[in-house]
Amino acid sequence: MSMRLRPFVLLFLIGLLLAACDAVPRQTETLRRLIILHTNDEHGWMDSYKGSGGAAGLLRLWERREGYTPDGPYLIVSSGDMWTGPAISTSLAGESMVDVMNALGYRSATLGNHDFDFGQEAIRKRRLEAAFPFLGANIRLRSTGALPDYVEPYTLLEINGIRVGVLGVTTVETPVDTRPTNVADLEFRPYAEALELYVPEMRAAGADLIIVVGHICGSETEALAERAAAFGIPLIAGGHCHEQIVQTVGGVTLIESGYFLQGYTRVDLMVDTAQDRVVELQAEYKTNRRGAGDPGIADRIASWARRLPAGMFDPLGYARENIDRLSPEMHRLLFEAWLEADPQAEVALASARYVQQDLLPGEVTQASVIGMLPTENELVRIELTGEQLLEVLEARRPLVAGLTETPDGYRLADGEPLDPQAIYRVLLPETLYLGGNYYDVARFDPSPTSTGIDWRDPTLALLRSLGTSRLNPLETALGPSAPAP
Image 1: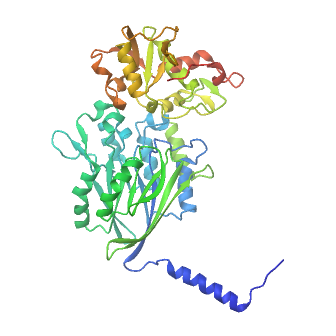
Image 2 (image 1 turned 90 degrees about the horizontal axis):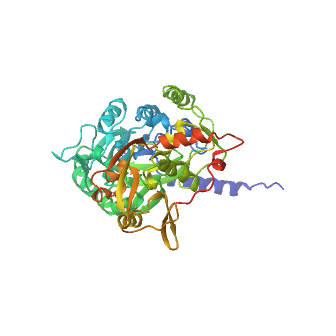
Image 3 (image 1 turned 180 degrees about the vertical axis):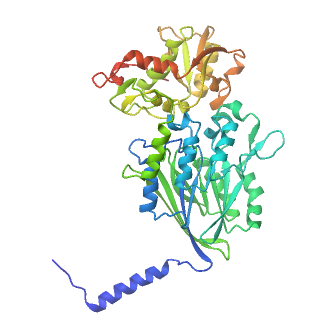
């Protein structure tokens, strides 16, 4: 049934529409618009992860969905952990990811803990290649208290008539969330201290708007909100914990945009540059689903893939289904394989945080294994008493092979109960031994034995020996495995 509006009704509706339009602030000489596009924890995922559009899809979405143009009122920022991940980035120490981020138009990136995985010299190289600064206002050299030469505390950008200040802070967990020796000469100071030191300086330099882009978790952004509000900071963008957050605490908007470029957060602001205040702010997280991607970015990614070592993508096996990074099948593929590679060891320990991604369906390659274990690690063997081993198990709740938790306590692979007085030979990644992920096992055995085994090699050997295929997929060939405690 059709309906015809009477003239006076139509005029009334038009009036309401015009009134609504007038309620939305419009740009003037001093009232200016800014659109922030934020990502975090990209971890080198320039290509698709689990149906995402990757970097090529992201740029296409920004152009078509958000109206992005390089000369428009846009600010693209990252909260860090840019490059440790799949082989296309990890094998090149992040060089490829920086190139792709340049092409996407990033204007700043805050250093995350995993950005130190390849050492500080690698960061220096990446900074020379990047078209954007690396931020970290709370990073200091222990010897002098100065900022490292590859990092800046903040950046000031002129965008659509707004002088925008971006202040970066890096997680204080960095010394235990990368290889500890890589940052032994650095300290990571409190976030609020960085605000106290640099926000007045940024205001004095003419900043109309200051935002914080941190590699810090949601709980930390909440704790920082009150101090940010006191400084007139309307937005804190976070990372590190792979969360999706859009919330307001104490008048400060807090955001975090997931991980692996599976989405981003758009923040719309209207800024009164005469009074240095935000008169309107809206934020929304948006997914980056696979679709038509930008061909230039796709070609760039393909070019980097061709630079990887020969054999990186040769098939070693086949997985019919996605294998979760913490599943019993993954446990068998990774940690039980370590014990097979070192028969002298009875127990293997690992941190769940060191297995970065699931094993995706399809052909399994060396690149697949690098993606699951993207950091460099050698396996070391230490000796622990049963009592010491139990202390580690209860304090850290690691992933374990060679030991099973039962209602009656822990039992070894042969069924024998864990003896508090006995000595056990325990295998673990060197980074954990050195203090990563808050482990302190070095106090129990100050003289570890180097096995010379790269932590990926046992998995590669197991894959070759299983010879899986579409008819005999990996998840079937691995068979049952006792889950980790």
